Image (tube, rainbow over all chains, first blue to last red; front, side, top):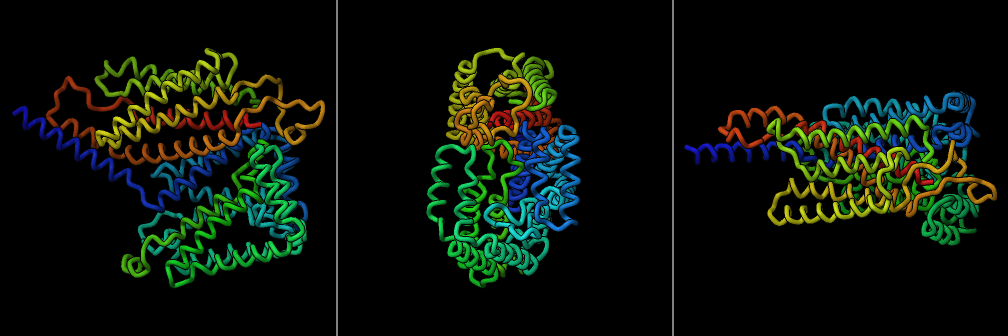
Length: 321
Length: 219
C-alpha cells in the first residue's frame, strides 16, 4: 500500500515537473520580448543615475535635441525641457518608474500586451519630445550616432514582437505578415543609407570626429579603439559614407532574397554593422559619463535583426499559417 | 553615489526589507511545514544587508574586503552545488545554483570596485565632463567600470528572466497544490515552498537595486 502511494506521489511530482517545464519553455519570439524587457528595465535604471535628477538633464540632454528642427518639433521639445528643468526630481522619478514598469510588464507573461501597448505610446512620446524625431528634420541626423532614434526602434520592436499564434518564416512577420515586415526592414535600412549620404555626414572628417567624440570618460581600451578607428577614417569621410550607404542598402534588400543563405548573410552583416556603429559611433551609448538614458540604437538594431532570423522555411510557415 | 537622498534611503529600506523577509522565511518555514532552501535564503539575507551598507553609510556593518571575501566563499559554494546538480542531471537545481553564483559574483565586484556611499555632500552629477579641469570636484568613481556595466547587463537580464519564470510558474501553483493534496503524501514531510513568488519578487528587487547602485557610482 505504501509502495503504491509512493509511486503515485512520484508520478504526480514528475507530472507537475513536466507541467513546469512546459510552462517555462520559451520560443524565439518570447526570448526577443525578454531582451526588449531587459532594455526597458536598463533604461529605467539608467534614468535613476544622479545626473538625471539635476537641471543639467534638461539643459545638456533635452534642450539640444530640438536644435535645427522645425518649429513644430523644436517647440514641444523646448517646452518639455523647460518643464523638466523646473521639476527635475519629480519628473525624472516618473520617467524612471514608467520605464521600469514597462520592462517588468513585458517580462510578466500576463501583462505583455498591455506593456507593449504602453511602450509604443511612451516611445512615441519620447521620440517626439525627447529625441526631436531622432533629428530627422534637422538635416544632420547621423546613423552612426543613433539616428533615427532609439525610441522609434523601441516602438517598432513592440509592434513586430506582438504576441500572436501565427507562425511565419521569421518572428517579425508573425503579426504583420512577411511583406509588411520586409517593407519595414527596407524602409529602416534604406533610411540609414539615405542619412549616411547627407551632406552633413559625408564631409572628409565627419566620421573621424564623430568617433573621436564618443570616448569622453571611457576606459583606456575604449579610447584606444576609438583612436584607431578615428585615424583610419580621417580625411576619407566621403568614401566611408558611401561604403556605409552601400552596406545599408544591401542589408535592406537582403530580406527579399529567395535564398536563405543570402537572408542570413544580410542579417549577419546587420549584426556586424549594428555592433560597429554601437562601439565606434555611439560609444556603447556613452554610459561612462553617467548621462546615458539608453544604450542607443546598436543593440536595438541587432534585436531587430534577430526578429528577422528565418527560423522556419517559407513553405512550412505558409502551411502553419 | 549622489542620487537624491530619499531615493538612496528608499532603496536601502527596500533591501533591508528583503533581508528581513529571508530571515523570517528561515525562521518560520519549519513551523509552517514548508520547503525553503536555507543556503539560498541565508545568501539573499546577507546580500540585502551588504547592499544596504553599500547604499547608505548608516548601514555600514563590515569593511568592503570582508564582504568581498564572504561573497567569494558563497560563489565557490554555489558553483560546487551547481556542478553537483549538473552531475546528477538536476537541471532545476543547476539553474538555481548557477543563478545564485552569478549574483554572488556581482556582490564580490561591488565592494572591490568601490561601489560605496558618497563621500561628498550634494550632487556632482553632470560634472564628469569637466572632471579633468583644475578645481573641479568629482566623486570617487568605481574601478573597472566596463566590467560594472557588463555585470549590470547581466543583472538586468537575470531580473527579466526571473520575472518571466515567476509569471510562468505562478499559474501552476494551484495545480501543484492540488497535486500535493491528492497524492497520499507523508504528512510530516514538507512539500510546498514558502511564499515562492514573494521570494522571487524580492530577488528581482535586489537585482534592480544592485544595477542602480553600480550605475549610480559609475562616475
